[in-house]
Image 1 (cartoon, helix red, strand yellow):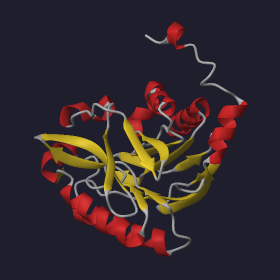
Image 2: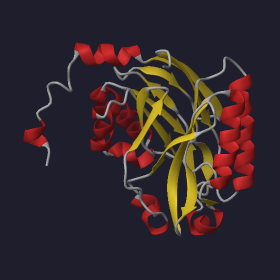
Image 3: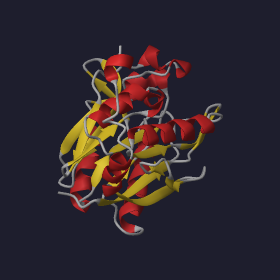
Image 4: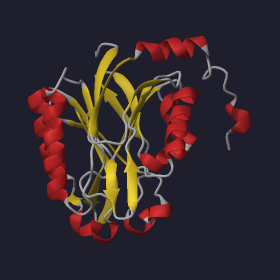
Length: 267
């Protein structure tokens, strides 16, 4: 059983659209810094679509077939360094479709869970190039329940609530969330933390891609919605330590889940 306290590292990186080789090299360097540049984290998280960026017109060619390259790379790293990895998300070619998928690795390098983005973002034409996932993102970190959502998913409170009702104490969110919607990013993530009384750990990309500029501001929020750590816009590693016992304390103090009346407001 993992101790209540957990050290996190969020790799807020620039992503080169359409250049998996550059992105793998960048991620490799940041992973080494994460484990060697300070106190070693228990869990490492990356941004959304870090392998390809939003090169959607080329995505079928660029996508990692069955996630094979990603899984081999991250499995070896997690096993070597004894860390959990929430592998951001990648463009993955599977059964003739491209999915936006997270793979999770335990300290021994085993794939323990995966999640493909359920809600596709029409403003960036995702639905024209990507297939949607069809199951919630659930995982365990040495006995602790957690959840996963990707970027646009955070606009759907029903999904976060389902994960919380399933026992999730923390929610991991890789993203490519751009200017000018920083206010939405902070507000939605904070709302998900407060209403579900759980930690929210969100890793956003930074840099520019075409005409789009990404603002970073990766965030760790506690179950009260208070900021534990927040980055600026620069490429960086965000480090934080959280205490999962706070989740139980907050849920006991304000018993939201016990006071729900789902027969009235659930369709």
